[in-house]
Length: 182
Length: 286
Image (cartoon, rainbow over all chains, first blue to last red; front, side, top):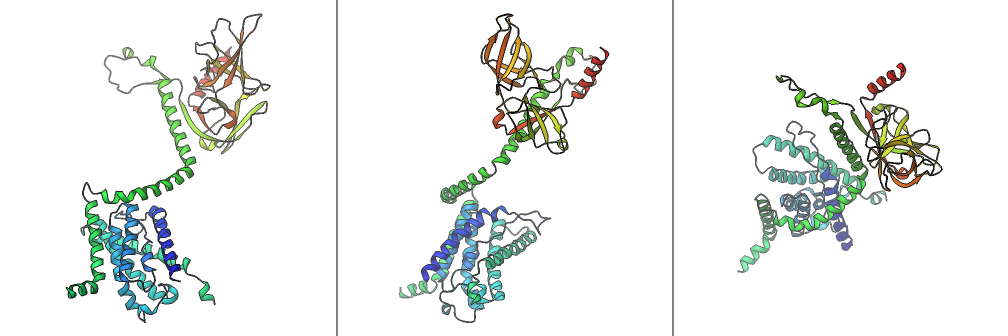
């Protein structure tokens, strides 16, 4: 059972990297940031950290987040920015889950955070909060200053909404329906 | 010492977190300096390979689009060459200008003004007596009847029927369309196609004194209203001499390969109408 989780997450790692690099990176949006004209792209790779099993130790979360971010960085030549944001997100993950889940995390053995065992609103709060942290960190690092604070904030909000949409689509697509049927 | 190890074990996650973030910041700081890119570039041997595979795929998929863009660039370049070649420089000799030249505009008189349109061959016949090629451009794209069509290698034909989006081109591999051809030394004659021998044009009755060798090129002349001058028709492959009167008969291999024709240029001459009117009125008064 545990091995299946490893393989599943490793496959998910590569699939997410490929989707992020070859599909989402080609989508440049300027929905709400139109007057400022700054472009942004939706990010889906943070969902890798979000969907790791409940009882993953913090050091493993940190390392997997770091490698995920670094891989995306290597493709996008944004040395370390994605890694930095993702590591911060991975560090906060356990605290957010502890606050949201009714029982201790070690009691959810062999399960991963999903809509099925969390419910829609806790899952959206969980993923939304961590994703917001990620975007906040990433775009702040990217702009490397707080000089144009309003446009930065606008960019974060717009990108966050778009990424959230993609994450919801991902969850809807890859939630196994067979378990809920029986 | 025991306490130290305990503290490390207690705050292991925090220390790891801080360590990873420090690594990230070092990477970011490196990338913001001039000589920075070293650390990322080592990873780029892998990412570069993946990007290259991805690009190869996209390259293959977009070959058609690329071909189209090259075609339009070729058309533009050909148009530019013709713009230089067909200007009548005699009229603009500096000596003929008045001494007090207040008029600074350059009057270049052209005797032809060619515009090139690109087109794709969508249907093609080579086996009939009169062969037609259908192309995917029509009157909506600014084509009219009688415009000449060339390929990258040589002459193809001229438009005979036209609809909104398509036109059918009477290829020079047709009995009803002789083309006047010119050799390098200026000797000219009419090239006809004989459908008994496909892929072969015949130039009859070339004068005996013309020195013609195998492999000589035959170009179009400027006599034709339809065809632009100096487009390659074909090359001489065989020479027969008539024993009675000494006239030579040339067999030409067409420059265009009609069997795998894919892209062609349609040439419109903006001054063809004027010339046609003049020549028509001249023949009427005869």
